[in-house]
Amino acid sequence: MHSNRVALTSLAFACFALASVLSTQACGSDGGADIFCREQPGECAGEIGGECQSTDDCFDGTCCPDKNCGDGMCTYFCDDDFDCPETMGCEHGFCFFLCERDEDCGPGQSCEHGKTICEYEGGD
Image 1 (cartoon, rainbow, N blue to C red):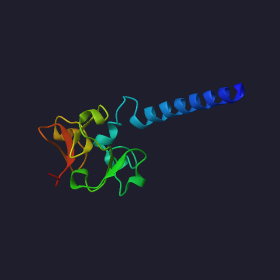
Image 2: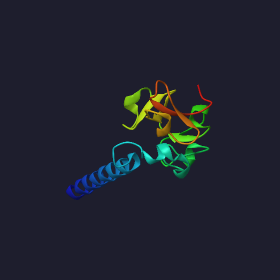
Image 3: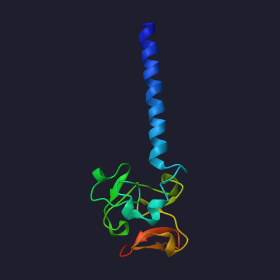
């Protein structure tokens, strides 16, 4: 009985440690999505901010299919900014990279909603 408890405790600790490592890697080193993907989404396939056609294409999060996401961008669902990594804000139920000017955003995007988030042109 004692050896079973030790084995279960060890297994639980290993699972917790693995989950901690994976969540840190998924969010990038600054606790948010990789800021490189804000400016170069074409080089970030599968990463947050990268292009996708379905959620299966994303390593983490979900594929946002609407015009604001360029018809396919890996991101997260959200209800407010607190649901997003610190480098992103919530709009239209999805997380978008934060910006202060159009030059902060990737090709085909502009800094929208009072100069706060990068959205693809053609969205609302």
